[in-house]
Structures are given as structure tokens and as C-alpha cells.
Image (cartoon, rainbow, N blue to C red; front, side):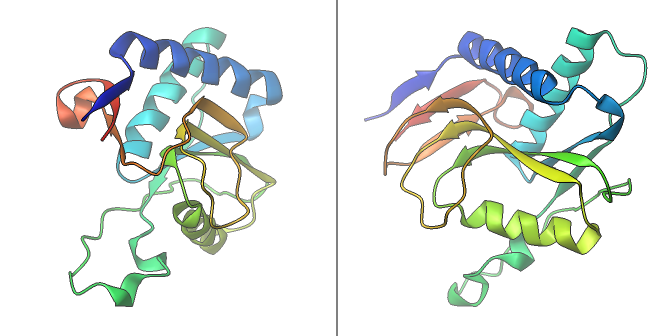
Length: 174
């Protein structure tokens, strides 16, 4: 049975809350950059970036990029399926930047560990701050989000739907 844990309006409010928290912790926006993790982390990152610009009424752009962790997964050779590799595009120098790393759901921590490995290949950021819409708990690695929209402890699947890819905004637990 599916259970809705965030509606479209709640997602919008949560993104505003997250953007404000990011701005509070990062006063010097000249060192800030946003990187989304493929796939839904990219859409969340874009929304966070747009909300940040709206709140600050900014004229300058915050650097934005996205990455794919497929080739960095620790279970890559264990599946018989051939993985789909998506784009990685970080069109700015990460050295000395405060990177806002964005993903939709944090569960075991393995995706984030892989994303950190990808970022390391691009240079040495000043800091990496993790933003997630949903924290499911039940970590396998010692990784925690700096900014969390909603904590919902569950071993059940959490599906984040964004209008850009799914035609609707909603977070459900299956």
C-alpha cells in the first residue's frame, strides 16, 4: 500500500526551507556551487538553486553541475544488468568551492560515498555539504546530511516524483 509523505505543496515549502538553511550557513555566495546527483537529485538541485536566487534576489549566477555515480558504485560488477550511464557535467573549478551536493533520498549512504569519489576526481572543494529531500535512516556508512527536508525512517522504498520527469510532484512510500 502506498502512502503519500509529501504533497506537491509540501515539497515546495520544504525546498524553500532548505534554501533558507543553505543561505544561513553559506553567507559568502561567491564560493558556493551546487551539484545534483543523477537523476532526481539534479531536478531537486535546480529547484534549490532557483529558490536560492529568488530569496537573495541575485543577479550573479551560482555555478551548477551534475554527476552520475554509476561507474563509482561498489556493486557495479555484482549485477547482471548493464548499467545505464548518465551525464556528468561540472563546468566549473571545484577547488576552493563550498559544494552543495544534492540528492533526493538518503538511505544507506553508498550513493553519497560514490558521489564524493566523483567530486574528488574534479579537484578539492573547500567543503561539501549534503542536502537531501528525504532521509530514510538505516545507514550502512557513516554519512549524514547537513540539510534534510524530511526524516522518515523506513526500510520500504521511498519514491520521489518530480513533475519534470514523472509528471507530478509527490513523495510516496511503497
